Amino acid sequence: MSDETPAPSVRVDCLERRHDVTAPGTRVIPEETPIAFTYGGSTHAVMMATPADLDDFAIGFALTEGLIQSGEQAGDVEIVVSEQGIELRGWLKGGRQEAYAARRRSMAGPTGCGLCGIESLEQATRALPKLDNSLRVAAGALIEAMDKLPSAQPINQETRCVHAAAFWNPSSSALIVREDVGRHNALDKLAGALARQGVAAPQGVVLMTSRVSVELVQKAAMIGVSVIAAVSAPTALAVRTAQACGMTLVAVMRGRDFEIFTRPERILEQASAHVA
Image (tube, rainbow, N blue to C red):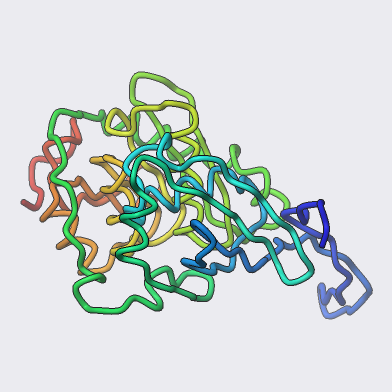
């Protein structure tokens, strides 16, 4: 047992081949650690993730999984580090522990596979809250916010291989950013950060450095975000899910260009021809 959380990145030796010449070198790469979520002594999930922002991760995961409805219901979180990995021990409050016991399930998956281990098809297409339509975002401001994201990713600046999830409020230029080797983990950490800081998620936009899978739409909807924007394309199920819950899905953001797949009325100054 160790009290020290592993660093989120490490420098390792390698052989570099450059211009037809091979020589000893080094590279900084992200750490990947098994992280177990336990509630009331029962293991709910084991995810492979970057060992950073673990308090945010614990609360955000519980929120996006629907185990709690607010950060206050998460209770205290104990971080236990061992040779095998990290355990995030939580105790749910406000009757949520009893509700959790009634629906307890076990889930284990590799990086990028947050739906692994669910017990039924119904759980994969869970009902989501209907999102409010009041938020409006200027296209130019959205582009500027996405442009700022790379400089707000310290782990990725070192490693060039981790995802980020960011929260941007159109009334402010500030970004809240969380990083992880898994895109869904990064969004869980962001959800926890918003809850712990008392930030109203419906007032802002989630920015992702990845493709948009259905799970990202589900997690964003669970915390009340009505606009998600990403650098890569969405899946077809992500588009259908976003449309059904009332979310605006913006993707393939490259420079000044992007594509709006659902609910375009929230994005101002876009081209006149767009999808429903």
